[in-house]
Length: 279
Image (cartoon, rainbow, N blue to C red; front, side, top):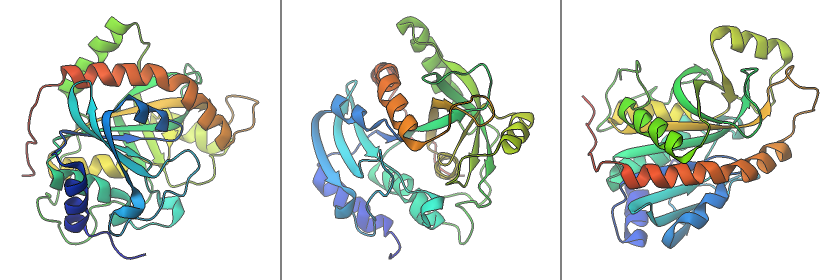
């Protein structure tokens, strides 16, 4: 597969959308039904974007949907690319760079994750406070991309003001919301019992195979970033139920309604702040 041409991809998306989105919302496994919440949608399959492959994971629709949600101009990315599929780091994070080129100032990442924290149950929603990168790669490796900083500050990868707003909205909606740390692993196999014990001792509350590369590039570009994990299963060793991807999709579909309502409220109340820009 050829490398993704960020400029060309942004031109194609921009011409098809006919507007400049404020927010990129990335949908994880089992959350593609949130596309139905977009008003006046414009659908753009990944295949129409220069250099993009099709989404190869069941539960990822493999399309962009642009329109309005919560009164905000949004671009939904239904599906993402993963390290375990054999894609390069540049391909995995290309959607964030494309969104920046389109004028997006805020990126909201969602994912399906295993609950390493024993207190978490399938269907629980977790607002990410921090992460641990155990994927053995960093998407900023190589020449510095235009507009990106070489050594971004990762002390607060997820925007504190947006987090505070989210917590308040969840409370007003009566939506239970945990706050926790996400451990990113390469996959595609689920973790062993020993690995889960290790990750828990390192401080991980949820475990997944995405999100962190995108958050790193957001920091490098000066984009505001917020991230949610939907707990779709208890991590290995915390339940006697065998793990499988179908469980991830089913739980995501059931519990995603709560996340959808929270996201709509968040978009409606989000200030129209612009990107701070890389420094």
